Image 1 (tube, helix red, strand yellow):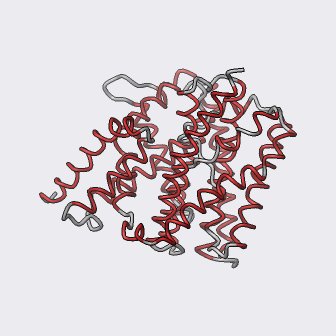
Image 2 (cartoon, rainbow, N blue to C red):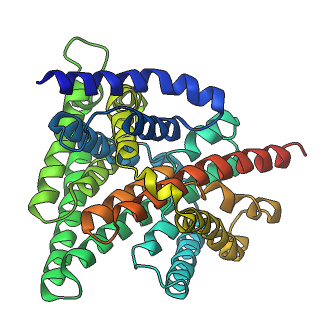
Image 3 (cartoon, helix red, strand yellow):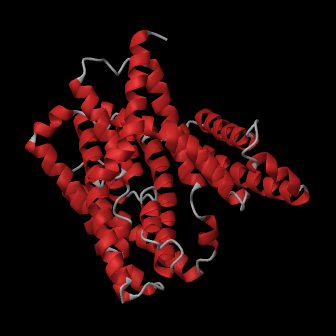
Length: 388
C-alpha cells in the first residue's frame, strides 16, 4: 500500500471518528455528516480519490454490507403481527405511490429512473427516529415501521426490475434474466425452509449463526459467509450483487428469530466501519460544481417536494387500514426520508449509465434535504400526536 493510500485511509477514518459528534451538534443524521465530510476533503485537499483501489473497494463493500443490514434489520416479527387487511392496504398504498411516481416522471419529462427516486422507501433513518421518540413499541410507531418495511422490500425488488430493464430493455434476454431471478428467489425460499427445518431438529446449532462475544466470533463469520455466497450467486445470475446482499440479510432475519445479538454485533462492524466509508465515498463522488447551477438546486428541491407530495396524495388509501385519521396525516411524513436507498439509486443510476455525475449529485442533495427536513417535521408531528 502506498503512502498516499495510507493518507487517504487516515483522512477517511478521521472523518468516521469526528462526524458523529459534529453531526449531533448540527442536528443532522450521521450519514449526511459523512457525505458532507467527503465533499469537504475532496474540495479542500489536493488528493486524487477516484483511482484509489483500497478506498473504492472498501466503499463498495460498505455498500454491500449496508444492503445486507437493510435486510437483516427488517422487523420480521412486527410484519408477522400485521393483519391481512392492513398488509393488503399497505401494498396498495405503495402501488398508488408508484403510479403517481410514473405520472410525475412523465409530466416532468425525466428519465425513467426518477420513478425510483420519487418512490423508494427506507427504514434506515426511520428506525432510529422512532427509537429516539420512544415510539418503537407504541401502536402508531409500530404501524409506521411496518409500512416503511413493506415499502423497503417493494423498493428493493423495484430496483431489481429496473436493473434488468436498464441492462437488457424489453427483450428475450431480459425475460431470461427474470426467469433466473425467479429461480434465485425460489432457491432462496427453499434454502430458508431447509435452514428452518435443520435448526428445528438441531436447535443448539443456531449458535453457529448467533454466537458472539467469543474469541472466534462464529456468528459474525457465518454472516459474512452468508453475505458473500448470495453476492456470488446474484452476480452469476446477472443480478446486482448489492441486491443479493439484501436478500441474504432478509433470509437470515426470517430464519433466526432470536437474532438481536447478531444484529448488534454485525451493526458494530457495519455502522462502525464499512458503512461510513461508503457515505464518505458518496461525498467524494459529489460534483460540487453542480451546486453553482441554479437548475440543479431547483431540481433537488423539486425531487424533495415530490417525494412527500406523492406519499400524501396516496394517503387516502391508508384510511382503509387501522390508522386513525390523525395518524394518516403523519404516517406519510415518516416514510418520506429514504436516505440510504435514495443515495443507492443515485449510485445505481451512475452504474447503469442513465445518470451523469451532476444528476447523481442532485439526488444525493435531495436525499440529504429529505433526511434533514422531513425527519425533523415527523418528530414534531408525532410528538404533538402523543401529547393528547
